[in-house]
Image (cartoon, rainbow, N blue to C red; front, side, top):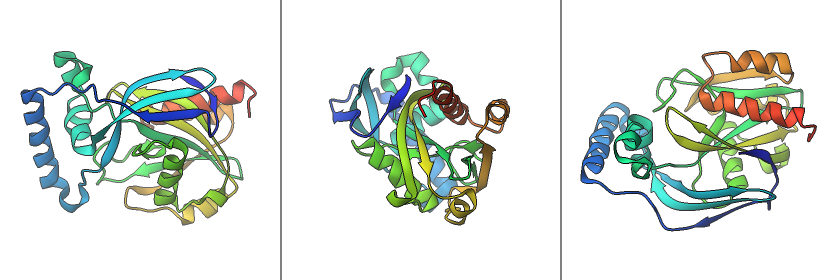
Length: 239
C-alpha cells in the first residue's frame, strides 16, 4: 500500500479480534515472556498495541483494529513468526507499527541506531518508530517522536502517511509516515532519548544516498521500506 494521505484521510476504528487462541501457542507466549523478563527485567513492559484486522486504501485509508499487547507480539511475531506456517496467520498478534521518514530542515533523513537493550533489531538502523496504541494514527506518530526525540507539534511542518510495509521476518504491518521538521539535524540530535538509541544515522535527501542506504545491511527491513516509500513519493512529484 502506497500513496500520500493527510490528517483526515486515515480512519481507524475498533472491531472484533480475529486472533485464534490455541493452548500450545498461548503456552509458548508465556515461555517467551518469562525468558524475556529474565533478560530485560524492569525494561520489559507489556504495553497496549493494536492488531490489524482489515484495511482498505483508496482516496482514504480505512483500518479496522482490535486490542492486543506487547506480550502477545513478543511471543508470536517477534520470536515465533513461523507459527503462522504451522497454525495460520490468525494466531499472530499482528500488531501495527509506526515508522517515519524524518526529514530535517537542512535536508537530511534521520534514523535511529538502536542500542543493545532493545528486544528486536539491536545495533541496527531503524526509523524512529513505535507501536500503534490508539485510533488517531497521526497523533500516535507524533507521540513517538516526542518520546524519542522531544519533537512537538510546532517542530513539524508537514506529516503525511505514505502507506504500509510488512517486515517479512516479523510478519507484521508497519504504517510509514513522511515527517518534515522545521528543525535542523543538529537541533534534533540534541533531543535524542538514548533509552532505545545509541545515536542518529543521517542520510542526505538525494536518490544516490538513499539508494546506497537501502543496500546497507545495517538498515532493518522497515528502514528500507521507509526509504522506498519516501523515494516513491519524491519520484511521483507529490512533494
